[in-house]
Image (cartoon, rainbow, N blue to C red; front, side, top):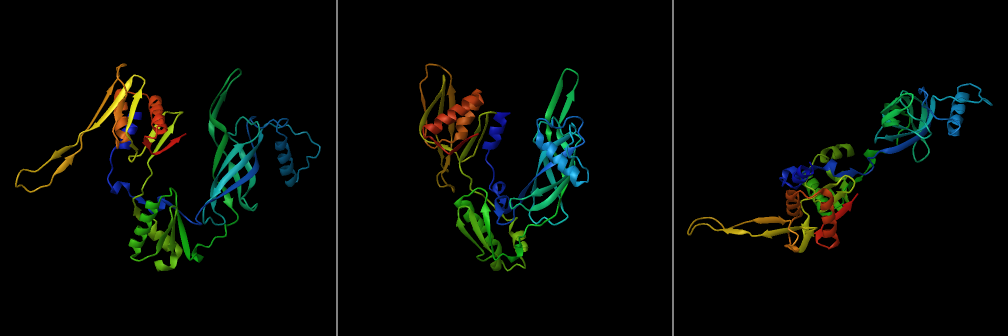
Length: 364
């Protein structure tokens, strides 16, 4: 499976396939969501709630809710096992209006075993400014299963966390007037001067005049007035589907836990000798020159020819990898021999440490 993944990643693609919509490359300044958080109580659990002796905050919030509902519980010893204290989180999307509904995530913070079948009681959700922007309530869809008997129990997934689809109603709007903007900044998700320049050219080509200016590797500024559109929203709607070919950095990403290796096609190696245990890798470039017949029309063509071989004799010394060899050729040779992902990761680390791997090396 890993070999198939690497081969798919290293196959050449056409220029058209590399073009990406502008909306997938940038974030529009001001058009963003806002995080919300609240502290609430889940009721209706089947004996899987918090132990109030170990979670006194659960008893406190339960008493406060009951008193607000007109039930006097002062001095009472509450020991139910069907309630649990939870943290409720949500993301308020841009341009959310009063009365709209959003999804919420619910996570237990006490010693509750499961939130399956529980109901979240009305919980205010606050933003970073302390204001209440939404109120959540509803039945929780937990993401786990619990099966238990007299002497054993089995848990699959995480039953102490769940979601309430459309479980919060928006009560306050974010003050942001998109139509009042005279200009808007487009923030690149992957800052790069070449990509920013291509975005600038693509937008100006769309409007046939200068409306976008690259400010730095991560910012392109759009002049709303120069677009001559009726509103800022119309201008964004016109440019967000423009196709741009991004210039990606040469990067190798390694996940040591799963043995996954992902690399870009622009990764290159300098002249270096490679050997892994009793394995030696040799890569040779022997380009051939094809010429047309005498007095015939045509041009001389250089045909690339790459020879890759791996020897596993213990007596073979280090072999030299010529300068300019692509990492895809090295990986193809190692895959042909069946080198394990762990050994391949060690080889990549050594190449980077030797200064022969010309790419950003990311280890997760």
